[in-house]
Amino acid sequence: MKSRKKLLIVDGYNILRSGSRYRHLQQAEDFTYEVLNKVREALINDVIAYMGRDYARAYVVFDSGSNQESDGTEEVVGGVHVVFSGANRSADTAIEKLAHDGRERGWEVMVVTSDATIQDTVFGLGVDRMSADGFSREADLLDEEARQEQGPRIARKATVADRIPTDTLAKLKALRDGE
Image (cartoon, rainbow, N blue to C red; front, side, top):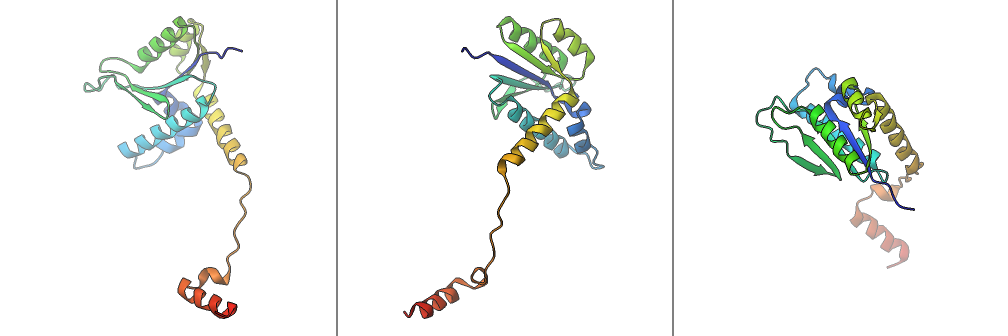
């Protein structure tokens, strides 16, 4: 059976604003650039887990069109292409182009966004869509499955020997063994 080429495209900031899994991460009173980086990192890690073996390629696109210093370069993190749209270019445009190019190459494409305009545009291209909350629920399920796979942890019983200094323990063992 021939494997299908599947492409996952995630509307980064839309998911962080609209996805139930990420909204609480931004509620901190001291929302700083460091907090934003942690939230973006959490999303990227979820995309890495979600793409698993099903998707040959995944993109997370963040809008930086109003940042005149953004050159639109991408970085690959854990197999996920992280893209900040270039100056004067919206994430919407980048997402639509990725979806269009993927379909032109014969790939199955899934776009994750709650932006109705993007959803309508990519639907016209024959692309599947998933909402921010849909992705949040999927990521929650993956976390739960991972916890269950770890199974129960057996606690190691602490003994008196664990609390005795090693040199004293060695002397006691020598006495016991008649050395």
